[in-house]
Image (cartoon, rainbow, N blue to C red; front, side, top):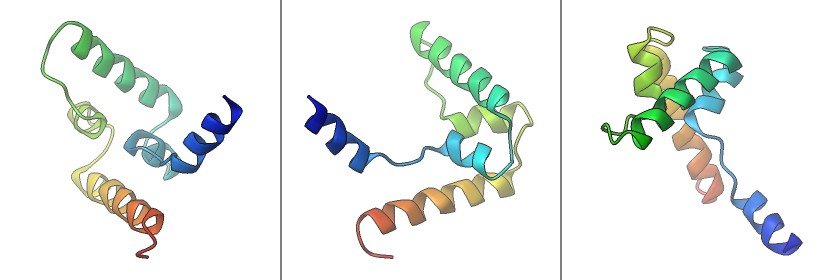
Length: 84
């Protein structure tokens, strides 16, 4: 089992909410609230919303910050693939 966990750690990539916190766009408390709302939507069979969508709807991030977050996600994926 430990080897499986180590492999998972190698595949770990930051998610949009984590990036938003790291960049100082939102607080950890806001992220937790948005995740809770996302899970509640899923459990009650409402349409799934991405975290950045929830954060934007609440006015906690701007459209410009969404672009920055998505850019960081893209850069991370390219680094992971060895293309950056």
